[in-house]
Image 1 (cartoon, rainbow, N blue to C red):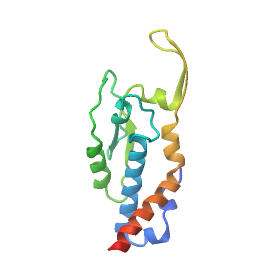
Image 2: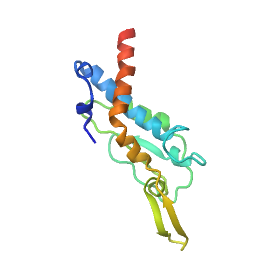
Image 3: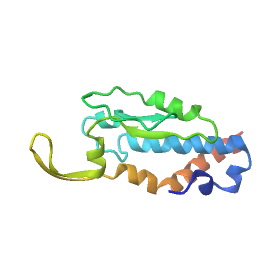
Length: 148
């Protein structure tokens, strides 16, 4: 995946506050595209989407045994909009079945049940769309600047 600076236009790089705003907006869009209804993540009960969080310190880890996740999307958006230039934002699932939904699973599980489950690829879809996401975010930020 191309780095953020390689995907942003000259206009976006001309002022640091624009650069930061585009970065934060892009990250928020990835988070929302992953977690909101109609987004890329598999939705049955919404629990998998609620297990997605953003962190500015490390990749979120799987929480074995946790069966219900509260909606902390507001806190995740706060993390995203609290970062400074040069920071890394990690967005990951905490539900232990999240990797199985993303990557798929073929074989027997620990209880002996046999699966041939195709992966949804929601993580890879967000990575693949990164240049388009940055372009959409830049258009939003540019609109804010032009409106004053």
